Length: 482
Ligand code: BG6
Image 1 (cartoon, protein in one colour):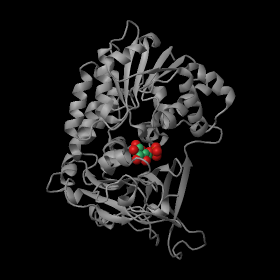
Image 2: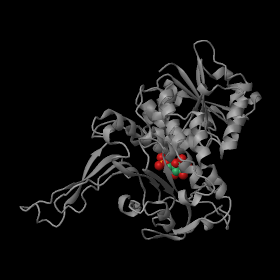
Image 3: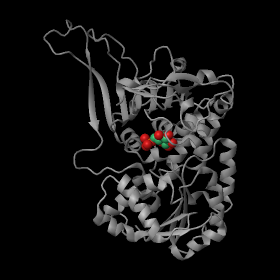
Image 4: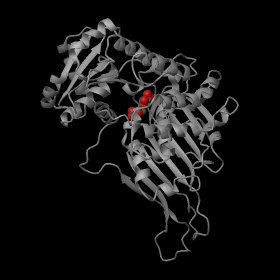
């Protein structure tokens, strides 16, 4: 890695403490970032020492493997400047940066535009010869199609598209990246990865967490914006895209956009057949009683925000015609469980009394563990092939990470990619734009009416069934998670 400066705007905030600094600390401890300088920037007029103390505390709380010896080396990388997001204040960063500098906007989304403009006006978007200037932007990019487009325009006053790295941390997860490798690196997969062989795909991200301390953000966002528009749409595009001719950022992103463009548009008239929303009421998580969404601190009593959203997407191309993709995510569900589950069609012809014959699934699990499962039917042990009551379903499991292998968190992965200039796992604007375009009719329809209620600790609203073909059933959240 070249000598690089990473300026974190929003350095006093939650994201910096909980995710960015622990990731940067670990990369440093592993010896991957010896030449990195990290400059914190925030409105608090702290001294460098104060910032160091703040980060020290954060790492003790959030870095899984905190060691004083590493900290004493890591702290030397840190620096701090306090100021506002206008060019005047930001100019103080001039003496701190190097030719290769990244500006990370770890800020509330409402400030993204202002920060990009301030940095541009202070002259930071113009790289010196042999240098680079990169803007890293957290999600969400806009709150709908119009605001995303307005934000793009504002950012492009000073920054070019290829200087902007939009983060979707799901693209840094092992399972997500493996979707690509596994699909395209194995001769046995690609020939069956199509509508002739696949019956349905279910992408689920279920959490037991509630809204926690994020009421102000979450009540405005809701599950569709928080999880589906970005993370789940990304998993969907990676599962459905065509093979790449080259593993390059633009080819990859072209292919993902191609999938989004092939989705049959949802219209005002078809919203109910393609989308379901829910909100949790009081219930139980194991033995623990939990309150309903409307009784959570900071949530308006009559809030109509959805804490669960499910979609049925249909892709109108040769590969996927007739295969529904079901996407769903929710808070306060029965377990922590997330996966991309692909069900294959039934096999034709007679199989000796194997009732589950053909009920094959290939599952890319994200939580509780990152692993792959293949569900297949096998003969029951015994002497008589035909005399057994049924075939039995066996699960062939392959964990992604073997003993002693190094694992990286999504933020470690993506920060490293950003510093190395690898753009493959960041979103190009047209991906964001297409995802918003597809969901706009749903967002519009959900401006009125109420979500369907579900008890905390359950499988979500029962109405989610209406999205499924009669031959399909939702995978069980309680049964598969932890
Ligand atoms: C975030 C959402 O982007 O992803 C959260 O805002 C969600 O609501 C989180 O809990 C889930 O991601 P992870 O990586 O923490 O499982």
